[in-house]
Image (cartoon, rainbow, N blue to C red; front, side, top):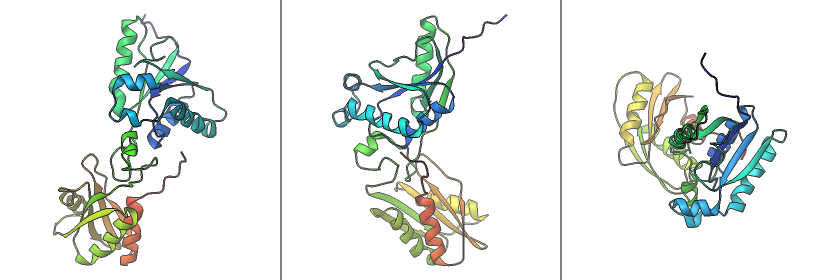
Length: 270
């Protein structure tokens, strides 16, 4: 008979948690969603210094980072059981007996695999790993503390610093309202508009236009006319979004629709 691992009694995750942001919130929500008590490791100042992370001198002190985690969990999950522990090494409590699940981001999935390697070395069962997708900023790049420290985005992923945006449309009349929508969403944007011709279904046209608009830019936007509206596609170097339909017949509707796609409302608080 195959032996089964003993059930774990807690979900474990760890990180630096500098400039607590929407990506951190997603990790904590995933941990609580397991239904287990949660152990949250927060890297100590000593560990941050030893790891030699880029910009380590600008990372908030442990007391501030830990307070940000506590504030979020207490407000969002007042009836759940959790504990915050200082993290002084790469594994923390993740290799201890009793761990039921390990929560990692897509960026730190390799760290989760190393945890299970270490557990095997210690003669312990590997644990299931929940990989939480990276949360994207509105420039379609992952939200990261480093980017917040550099002043590129805020904690909710809204772009703050300048951004280069390529805009391609099939009709010149669409360029002006779409450019205004871009500046509504990104006041510091530098827009490179182009009128291009392409064929096929509108969604495919928009995707191809976004790809061509991206050349030498940070974000590409493609707009193609459809009956009763437009098809709008967005893409960055890392991410390509499926084209979305913007209904309407006026340039005002196009401007509002493009602006809403560029900066969707973020309903969940931090």
